[in-house]
Every structure is written in structure tokens, then in C-alpha cells.
Image 1 (tube, rainbow, N blue to C red):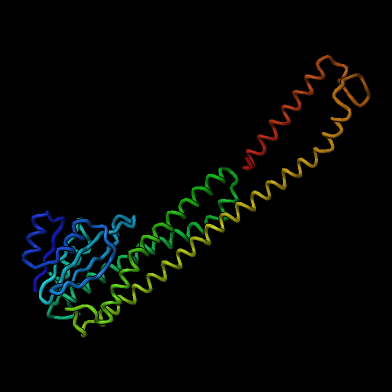
Image 2 (image 1 turned 120 degrees about the vertical axis):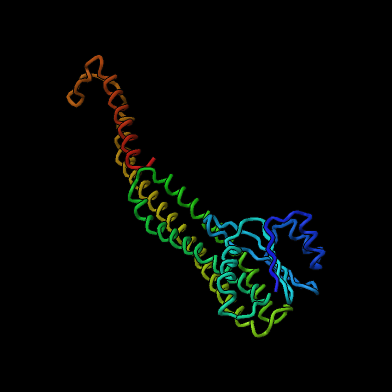
Amino acid sequence: MLWVDAESPTAKELADLKSRFDLDEYAIEDVVHRNQRPKLEEYGKNVFAVIHVPDVRSHKSGIIELFVFFQKNWIITIHSDDSELIHSMDSRIRARGLAPLTTAPSPDLFFYVFLDFAVDAYYPILDEVEERLEDLDKQAITTFKTRVRRMENVVSIVTTIGGVRRKLMNLRRSLTPTRDMLGMVMRGAVPFVADSNLRSFRDVYDHSFQLLETIDNDRDRTSDVRDLYISLHSASTDNTIKVLTLVATIFLPLTLLAGIYGMNFSPGFFQPGSGDPLGFYVMILAMVIIALGLVYWSKRSGWI
């Protein structure tokens, strides 16, 4: 059995592979253009598959496209980036072949191992997402106990949650067609895959279902965490409005009295200092100080 791995092949090298192994022209065109969804296609003499492999090393949910051609006695893998999957597969083959699966390597079992590595690569990314959601959930109460820069913190956290949701959607967009591809293999619709090896593919198929359920649960959890922050922010805003309404209500009758009696300063028992020529300016200064004090108090409380 022959395994050919091509990293960032040139046009001449692709043409050489096409002529030597009689690869389909449309499949080679997909390899050249890239940005393909995971899929599995039969071209008579061989099978062409596109596998999405999450790049665990970058922790950014980067997806590496792995193009696979296989037949009954050879398999070809093509990729543009340095792939951890290829290195792991190479180390395993050199150390112990495909044991304990079989002592006689076959292309369909190679294809199974590639799918197994690709699907398992989703687990550490989803574990990281779950830890991040757990931290955001714990930060909710702490964020609203601290009034300083509350709005900036809420905006930052909601933006973070949006990034997590986009990461989950990208993972789901890659994993769903991978599950469908595994379903085709399980139905026996893919040539060069022995019936005796379908049990191995069933394990990867179950893992893909489990991962999709985890992604859906995490996506629902992001909505719950986002709604929690929005609800707490609304409750905090309502409390601020309540306090300000109370202050306005207290000063309303005072403002009414000041409006009725005016600010005509003249000496009197209830108007100490009103006979002073600077009394009016002292009153204006007192109003300005009170206004600035209220503004400072509101800012320190995190209301404005």
C-alpha cells in the first residue's frame, strides 16, 4: 500500500499526481480553489474527500483543509499548511502501523484514522469554550457589584460572547457535513471501504453526534449568559432611575416654592444674609456647588 502526502504542491506537481493516479479533473479543481465544505465524492476509479481539521495549536478555531484521494491500494493527502494531523499520523505509522486496528494497512482504515484525528481535534476547542463560558457566568455578579466602568465591562463581555458564538457556528459549519460524510460511509455507499471496517467508522460517527450536541448546548448557554448580563444591566438601570426619580421628587416642591416666591432678595427673618449686596451671588455659587456635587456623586456611583 502507498501513502503520498503533498504539502502545498505546485501546479506541476498536481498535474503529475493527476496523470500518475488518474485523478478526476473536477476534484483537482477543488484542490486548487480550496475553501470547500467537507464532502465525499465517488469518481469511479477513486474516492475524493475533503476533511476539515481544527488547528488546535492556534486556539483560534482555524480550519485546515485536508484533501484525500484513495483507492484499494493507495491513498493521497494534500494540504496547504503544516498539519499536526499529518505529523501524528506519520509518527503512528512509523511506530506501530495501524495497530491495534489491523496488521495489514488499507486505504479505508487510513481514511478512518484521518477522520478520527480530525473529529477528536474538536474536543480541546470545545473544552476551552466551556471554560470561558463558566468564567463569564461567574463574573456576572462581580461585574454589577462594581459600579465603576460598568457599561464598558458589559459591552466588552457581550462582545466576547458574540465571538464565542461565531466560533461555535464555524465549528458546527465544519462538523455537520463531516457527520453527513460519515453517514454515507456507514450506509455502505462509499467504494473501497470494506464492510468489516465499518465498525471503526461507527465510533467516529458517534463522536461527531456527541460534539454537535455539545456545540448546540454551548450555543444555547451563550444566549443564557448574554441574557443574564442584559437582565442585570436592565435591573441596574432601573435602580439608578429609581434613585434619580427620588431625588427629583424631593426637589420638586422646593423648586415650586422657589418659583412662586422668586429670588427677590430683601432683609427678612427667614432670609439671613439677604440684605448683603453679595447675597445673590453667594446663592448662585451655592446652587452651582450643589449641582456639581450631584454630578460628581452620580459619576462616582456609576450612574452616568
